[in-house]
Structure formats: C-alpha cells, structure tokens
Image (cartoon, rainbow, N blue to C red; front, side, top):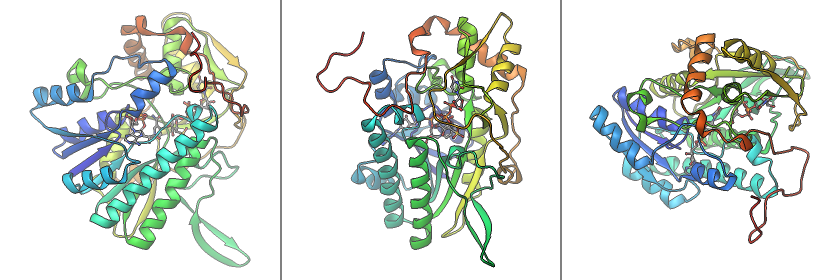
Length: 394
Ligand code: NAD
Ligand code: USQ
C-alpha cells in the first residue's frame, strides 16, 4: 500500500515508517521538525543521539535498498497538506504529527493555545484534503487513552450503550481528559467522527496508551536509524524516565502516591497495531476507535519493576504531584479490537526493562541531571518562561 506517515521524524513515526517500508509498503514521511524545535526551546535533548531526517532516509536506502520519500512542511499549512497528498497519492495516512506532551501543553496560556491550534488545525486541514482529493484514503489517527480520563466505570472502545428515560443509543464514550494536550485529542476525535458522517471519510482513531522502549527490529540495523528517547520532565514518559533515573542513581520520581493506573504498550506493538489498522481499513463513512494498549499498571508498580530489574541500588521518591489527576481510582479499559485483528503483544517483563536499562547505560554520559525534575505545575496559570526579549535562565 502507499502509506504517508505524518510526524515521521518523531519517536514513534520514524520507527513506524521503517517498519511499514520493510513490510513492503511504499512509504512517505511528513514532518515540520517542530519536535526538534521544542528541544531547543526547553534546552533538552534525546538521550539517544538522532540523525537528521535526510540522513535517516539515506541510511535506510543504503541498509535496505528501500526508499522513503520525505516531505518537510507543517500540517497547519493547508496548501502544503493538500499538495503533499496530491503528490504522494496515499491509500492510507497515519497521523502522528501533533504536539504530544501533556506538561508542555500546561506550561502556560501560550503553550496551551499552541498545542490546540497545532493539533486541531493540522487534523482539520488533513480532513479537508482527504475529503477534497479522495475520501477513500483511510485516516489512521493517533489518539490517546487519556481522552477517557479515569471514570468510575469500565472504559469501552470508543462507544458506550446508554439507556436514558427508557430509550437506548450507542454514543461516544464520555471524555474527561487531564490536560490541554489530551483535550486536543478529544477535539480531533469529534472532528474526525463528524467528517466521516458528513463526507464519508473513513477513519480509525487509535486511543494509544503510554509507549515505552526505544529499539525496534529496523532501528537496530544501523545507529543512524535510532529513534529518540526522551527522559526530561516535560517530554519523557514515565517508564522511560524511571529507567534513566535508575541508571544515573536518581530516586525514581513517582508523582504522589503512585496509585494512578495507565494503559501501556511496547514501542514494537505500536508498529504492529498501526500496521493492523492500515491493512484492515475502516469502511466508507466509518469512524472506529481501537484502544491501543496491552497492559495496565500503576505508576508505583512500574517504579517497583524498575527497582527490581536494576542490578544496582535504586530508590523511589514520592514527589509532590505536579499534575491534577486522581491518585486512587477504578481502572478497567477494554482493548480487544486489535487483539481480534491478530496483535500478539510484547508484554512488560524484567527482560524488557533490562534491555531499556542497557540502552540508557550506553548513553548515560548524555544525561542532563537538571532535566529530570518535573517543572510544570498544572495549577499555575502564570507563565514561567521568559517572554520575547527577556534573558533565558542559565
Ligand atoms: P513526537 O513528538 O516524538 O513526534 C511527533 C512528530 O510530529 C514530531 O517529529 C514533530 O516534529 C511532528 N509534528 C508536530 N506537529 C507538526 C505539524 N504541525 N506539522 C508537521 N509535523 C508536526 O511524538 P511521539 O511520541 O512519536 O507521538 C506520536 C503521536 O502518538 C502523537 O500524536 C501522540 O499524541 C501519540 N501518542 C504518543 C504516545 C507516547 O507514549 N509517545 C502515547 C499515546 C499517543
Ligand atoms: N508520572 C510519574 N512520574 C514521572 C512521570 C510521570 O509519576 O516522572 C505519572 C504521571 O503523573 C501520570 C503517569 O505517570 O500519572 C503518566 O505520565 P506520562 O508523562 O508518562 O504520560 P502522559 O502525560 O499521560 O502522556 C504520554 C504521552 C502522550 C500520550 C499519553 C498516553 O506523552 O503523548 O497521549 O502518554 S495516555 O497516558 O494513555 O493518555
């Protein structure tokens, strides 16, 4: 199939593009390099060095003999979006190209506005381009499990049957997201469902849990093909952060009691899930939702698993919660649709954590201790960043 991967320079987009290419698809990637810019802004960097997109694509051609077309541009530019789709003529578009950090979206007003404009406008431009050029293009959109929040009932895959005043309907599952970033995904979901209803677009919304890991079969073929690995307080996700903290001897930063529960998956399963969604497309006008995670854990459990897997001493610190989120809550979320399509998950085992610790150990010299602490407080509404023209904090 001809597959365009939006956000193909990112943590998940790049290894997904490689995977789809190796599996025989014609792959193009789109990216604005916004993510590399956030690193400059925050003064942080990926733990594992990453090459330019141009070099990545070149190395992939040398290693595999396969070509990936790269398009550099911004999804919020409607002309770029429609012209890229016109040129590449995809059968499926996999949309990863959004600002994806909850803390980044909660820094201040400017970052909340940026996140929602970038994400919602980019997706709207894409929906219009698909509807205008060819509504049979299948949109595979990365959503998030965080759209649902933590309700006191079971979470279904996108929809719930409700009986009200004696009448019954199947309706979108209620959303109670925990950040302006997670809210941007809710807005996207509504817009996509509407486009399916009015224009006959077909779409799969992948409500993905938190991804961990860094190595995939394809990225391991050459150091130039490595994907990024974030561990800082803004972009680092929980298990990746805990592995870095263990290796450098920093106490594992569990926010609050650590009883908050989240759905998780291995990076290799992200690739497999996307491929399953692409090769088993939604039908014309269908808007479907898959909950894309394989297991759920409390944050405290994850910390303990890392402490147990780490060969040296490692300690856990319960830091004052920077986020507004439920600490103790019920959590049971359905996730059968991708399993029904044939997903065989990589479950989180001590050996998985040990291989992540080995990646960190190889790059431990690159860890910036100052980047570890959480710096974004959900309750603060005043900007903490310098305004234009003001000196940057040393
Ligand atoms: P990432 O930030 O590493 O990658 C996103 C890529 O999109 C970046 O390369 C960035 O430059 C690009 N991008 C952003 N805005 C763009 C725009 N307007 N135009 C063109 N390119 C743009 O993030 P990731 O971790 O790879 O996540 C990819 C997607 O998966 C995101 O939509 C995210 O919300 C979703 N997701 C990620 C996780 C996770 O744990 N990493 C979990 C669930 C869902
Ligand atoms: N947490 C800690 N200590 C840390 C970091 C995080 O206790 O050092 C806690 C957080 O408070 C939260 C949980 O771990 O309860 C997860 O935090 P996270 O930063 O790993 O994940 P989150 O902010 O939810 O966002 C990540 C991705 C996002 C994706 C989401 C999937 O950055 O793109 O959408 O995971 S989900 O969580 O299912 O919504």
